[in-house]
Length: 323
Image 1 (cartoon, rainbow, N blue to C red):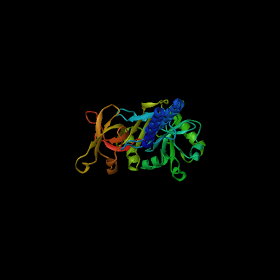
Image 2 (image 1 turned 90 degrees about the vertical axis):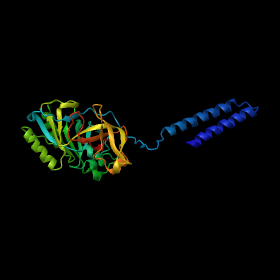
Image 3 (image 1 turned 90 degrees about the horizontal axis):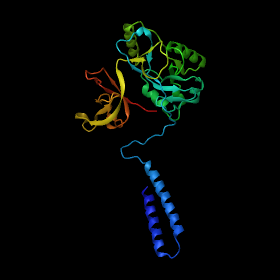
Image 4 (image 1 turned 30 degrees about the horizontal axis):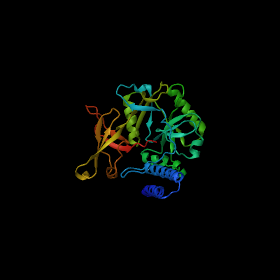
């Protein structure tokens, strides 16, 4: 707002000259000019505070953001788990969504701008689940549910796959029965109870994992049947996938070599344990030209851990949207 700054300087010179050359008492007038200068300066400061520096991305104000809901999060499946003690379900690669009885929110706390007809039949009971539109459709689903103005036609493709009743009493097995009853009574084709089943041992678990992934599924979830509801990462909930994934924060952009000499070669990231490593695979040419911002959180895939405990063959999957 350079014009605003010039005007301020001009006012100062005019009023200073009048003060020096006029015999009229200018105290009141000068005070008024000072007030005007202050107002202009305040407006200038306010306008410049909203400017975006070159190379930055302009922030987008969320529709409405509350504190992230406290939800149960899964751990990677260890080798010593007794499979028969768990209820198993398909892991849906969608967008996590929490219904608090009135508002549908993302895992980060932001409001999901769902059509009124989508949430109308949801119960007063809190629900936890995944917004999902089919196997291999994560990007499509994410694009639909993050629109500020919902598209009715697009939303008809989205299902709310419910797998938990936050804060409900009883074991998980009992809560599953409640979920099935709630979904049955809702008469809402968009509301689906995630099917839970039991398996005898690791062999059956691996066979089911092979079936699901062969058909385009992401993996399996194992939830301790006797578990009461709790939040945070817990030993009552595990995920099993052919490829593991995790999240990390981008701390630097590393220049590439060869064909990527003038582009991003790899992302330097910091994992949940505080250790840093590189993620170079899985990035498209467009993402190398315009990489995820430093400070953003990404999801990456990896095969297993090295002897040093670092991800082996880490590959970029996507940027986590914190709504």
